[in-house]
Image (cartoon, rainbow, N blue to C red; front, top):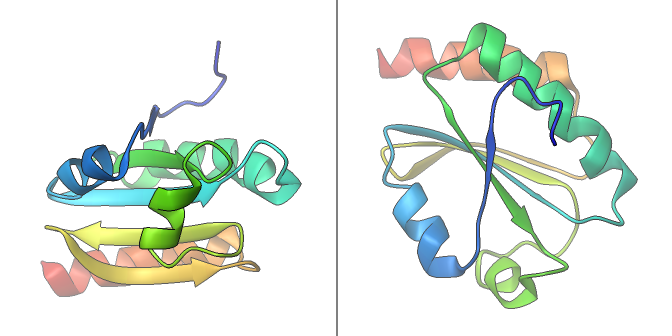
Length: 114
């Protein structure tokens, strides 16, 4: 049972991810069970989205379970966080990033998208 306040939808395939990205707003975290940073970020990101961006759908791609899907997306280091609007990449973060910065950038991006 997850303690996440918002629900991370696990992606089972590259095809499922492509369908997910058609949502109006999507935040995708690429991680893995053995990535401590990924596991620490996951509930904190979910909480931030639930509080500040409830319209954003959350997806999680486990690169240990789906290495080919991660490679196809150009994800070779973890964690990677990408924010999409109508399937278009708006923001991207890799390896080292702060939660406050992600929140500020998402807020600014949503204002621009209006």
